[in-house]
Amino acid sequence: MDILNFEELGFEFDPEDPEGFRAGTQRIGPLIGALRTGITMYELPPGQANCPYHYEYAEEEWLIVLEGEPTLRTPDGERRLRPWDVCAFPVGPDGAHGIRNETDATVRVLMFGEVRLPAATVYPDSGKIGIWTGHRADDVIVPRDARVGYFHGEPGVASA
Image (cartoon, rainbow, N blue to C red; front, side, top):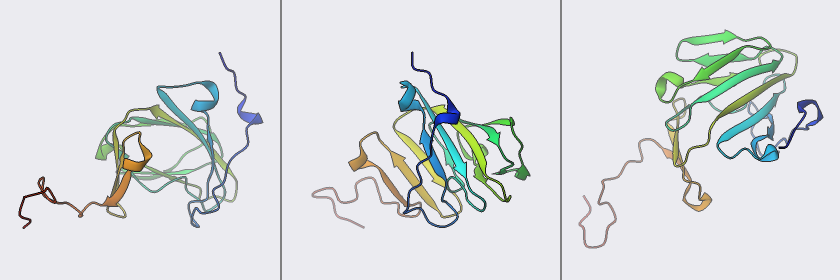
């Protein structure tokens, strides 16, 4: 069994993340051999969020505040959280959530949930949907209004 100490971990910051979404990430699941549970620790500098407001269709997610006071947005509104607050985000629109740091101090949160593929994630603010298959070449994020008919593009089928 692998044992990991959170205080000894560093965070990876992606230089391509846009302003407002420059959170440090540490994917813990792979480090301890977790196969069915995704576990990620985020460090949110002041003014940053870990990801856009979204909800999942395959995975229930959980949040534990480790340090600081992040602002949690859900369909019920916004509220300030504090260390050791725990909440769960159910599958579907009722589980929509976004976490951002509106304070002057660093925020650290732990997010975890099931690893289930295929999965779909909806981003209501930007009108996108993401499909995650487990095969990177087939994963896609597209506008929700980019719908086509079931037989669209099939050989020998006239397109409307």
